Length: 295
Image (cartoon, rainbow, N blue to C red):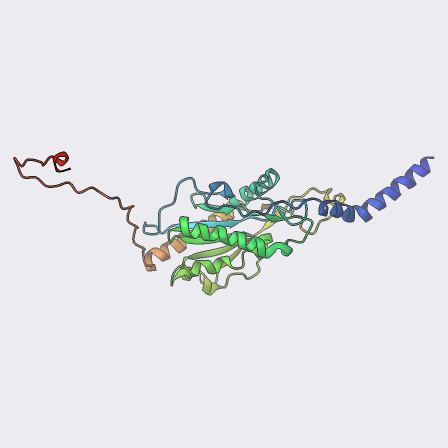
């Protein structure tokens, strides 16, 4: 009898490893796809990181530098399609990733990190790349239009989100003739892919336009027991957050100093214009006509 139990357990174990991926994907694929209604990036709630106070414009000295941070997709196992970024599960996992990446960024540098709809783990992330790229492009455009005020931008991107960020760097150059001088570098959390060429960054960086940050996976050692999904995303941590933050701080200050010395300072915009009623000038002793009599 004991032998039969052992054989039965072995058969179940083999069946689990052989069928778990297929069964799990089939169940998830049958679920209703999550809503992918575009996020409103004029709403602060659509950002995982956003400065509490609006940073000064580039007309101030030193020339300001922002970090636009793109975190990794959450890789949540839901129905096919995109996972709604408004969901609690997404927010918890995405915010955790942004918090970890932010440890490698210098304090005092404003960080803008948009939420975005992540591809479900049921499908490879690349299947939804165009949709996600458009969404992140809208977030970056909102940042440039409403928040940037000619400040330099340092792009910080998790390696697993690189397929969504191919066009963002060129958006900086489209803002002005010296747009590339306002690109304060590209920081990749993970392995480099050569996304940014040296000539596309601020001149002070020379050949150091793109930098990489060493990451280490912190997944569950028993994760091999769980179903394997194409879009699965493991948690990672920065190996040397303090050293990385210091290196980025030096880089940002280097770009800031170059822009102060060589960039064309934009004019500080005028405040909003208000209509002021014209008060008539009266000589001493002049009697003001009674408007009611004229009517």
